[in-house]
Length: 152
Image 1 (cartoon, helix red, strand yellow):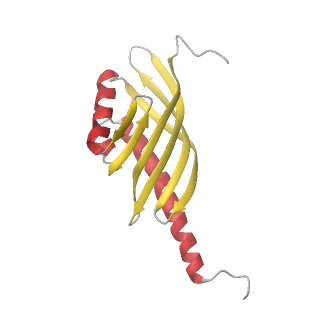
Image 2 (cartoon, one colour; image 1 turned 135 degrees about the horizontal axis):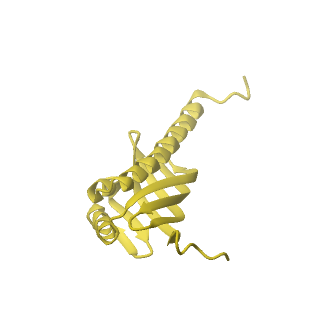
Image 3 (cartoon, one colour; image 1 turned 90 degrees about the vertical axis):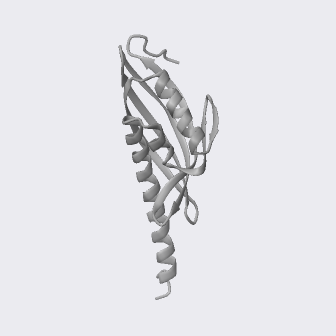
């Protein structure tokens, strides 16, 4: 039939969807790793030459990324839970997916804390296994419940 896609086209589309789903699932592995913080486990979710960008700077390579998380966890050892919402996946190239998403977090130390922001991620998928090549974290709000946040 004239309008039916050919088998090669269907296979390419299926691979794209599988890559996008593998990348989306990787976000949940990241959130779970943050909830049971082990800096080396978090860094293992990145490629060897992966880049993490935050308001505190740019960290390149697993060693530097693990160091960033080690420093942040030492500065704030509170128990946290992370939630990723509204992921928008974009297939960029074979084995490359970009995801823009929102995140929320809660924390319990001496007081209850909440915050939110955005992630912009680029992932490489090889043999169904995704790793971050780039991750940009932008925190929009982080406050305790006593202080709250001002309306704008």
